[in-house]
Image (cartoon, rainbow over all chains, first blue to last red; front, side):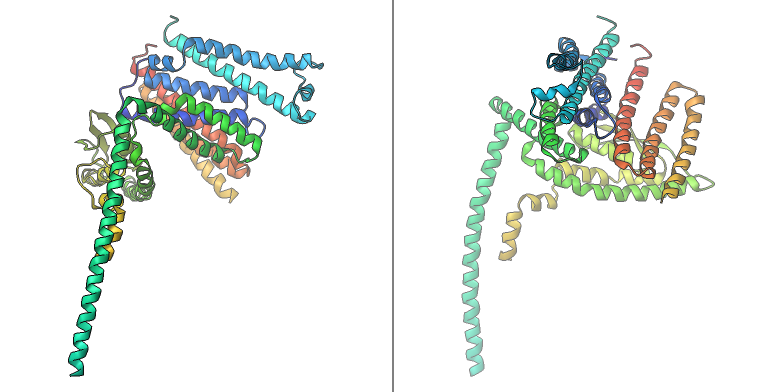
Length: 145
Length: 242
Length: 88
């Protein structure tokens, strides 16, 4: 499942389609407060775009683009952003993930600070989910090497 | 006697106008010659620049910018909000995606004729829609007929198109029109499953292939439309010259 | 107008049941794959029609686009898996 397809149509269409899938995934993450979506859904679509690259272009070329080490780093960065915002709120004197206290460092009112805090943790969740999906897929598909 | 004088005077007037016209045409021809030479030289320079290694950086940058603008356009369509917060988010996201995948969208394209290809592609779509509607009516007639006179065959034909994007365009157009489905493409040879003799005949007449070749400027024939598109300066000036 | 979209939606659901026949009783796995992929396409249109009925087109447009992307990638992945004769 890791070889490239030898079908011209699938290779070309997937190659042209991937940036649009990724921009749609980022749109879903960023507009979680307006339309259905949020962090997890956007992360799934981002991960699916990399899986599409793996099954059409082969694992080697996709590994050159997005290595396993980078996948592990992104997992951790996603979790770091999520917990980091929570602990930042703790430091600023509120409860864990109490975004209202973020208005001490950002020049916004408390309600907007909550909205920005939620956006922040959605981004963290999205990055983490994408990295985890890609890592699990490449692990299963290579049989655990 | 007055008539002869009048005729003579008109003759001379026509001669003067004829001379003036000839001089004007010569002047216009010389300016056209200079402009065309400059165009040709710029074109050659651009094509030569595309193949030298130092210009790979420039191609990458152009790829990045092209991808960025297309993605930003798509972002603005998707997100209906145009305030500063969402637009700045859009810029960051489009920059990120363009950095990750700019070599996927524009893999092997010639920039000198990107605009012409885009224009011709947009002009091709209404013709394709008309073909889809006509083929739809034909296949619906076949399916609703109690005898169902279908004659399914797989047709092979070699195509004169060269690049993979034009192959994909032709294959998708064939699959979109009801009655024909592209089954495989092997080294420039198309395997198409056709439902009846009429759709097979329409396919093998080659009109769709000609039109797709016209979009990507790839066929061996010289289309008058191509010459007129590329040299519209000539067309304009020739019209005055007669 | 709502009744019209509702009628079309019910017609499409009936067509989904027809495709489901092939999805259940298809002699080979590839038949089932083609049937499910066709159901995916019809689901897309049904979602959009529901958006028109509930008068919230923008929301259902996002959902249907997500489903279109996932249907495409899913069909490709399953086809690739079956091409290598069931080996991962």
